[in-house]
Amino acid sequence: MLQIKSFTFNPFQENTYLLYDESLQAVLIDPGCHTAAERKEVTEFIQGNNLKPTLLLNTHCHIDHVLGNEWVKNTYNIPLLIHRLDLPVLKSVEAYASNYGFHGYSGVEPDGFLEEGEFISVGSEKLKVIFVPGHAPGHVVFYHAESHLAIGGDTLFRGSIGRTDLPGGDHQLLLNKIKSELFTLPDQTVIYPGHGPETTIAYEKSNNPFVGKNARY
Ligand SMILES: [Zn+2]
Ligand SMILES: [Zn+2]
Image (cartoon, rainbow, N blue to C red; front, side):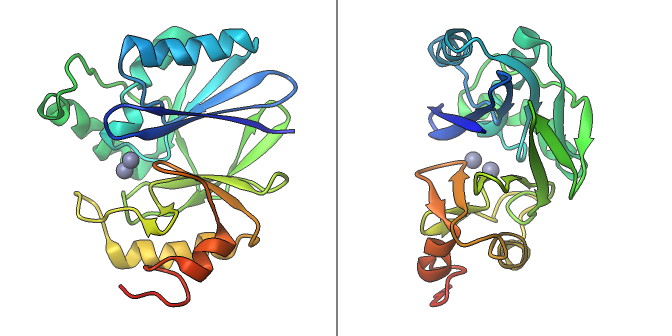
């Protein structure tokens, strides 16, 4: 059975997720931890549960989701996987991090690339990689069918969607991809987003003002 632990980090209130199963192998997704206190929360949870991190994944590479990449890689010596089309997004972070007040950020290279439709192992569980660009050019969502959950990054939020005014953003593409890639998942699927509380596909189909049945935008 897949277990999920969420943390909320940095001034962007970004949700970092840790997924693991009975084997205690764990995958870290979008580590936004920047301060020593935030990083201690992660290490204490991992130690306290005897978890063994095996992989680091990014749904996409905006600054709030990658602040802890280097630290995670160095602490746990695990590979970082991203979608190839977000490589320029990742590489650009170093140039603007200090403008946002994040001093001491140094970028890391990914160790490999995520392919649309492939499966990523968390112990004996499998996450499917779903490609949902629009908020960022190489944005992916990690879907676990058996437990009806997906790590959505900044695609779909409770009552909202990811902004598309950043470099590489494409509003119409995001709307289309949410409808074709996420709204085709079972209604009970719980979306764990990059910001804010969880939601479900059913709730967003009914209520989301951008992509729901009474969309106003
Ligand atoms: Zn983002
Ligand atoms: Zn974000």
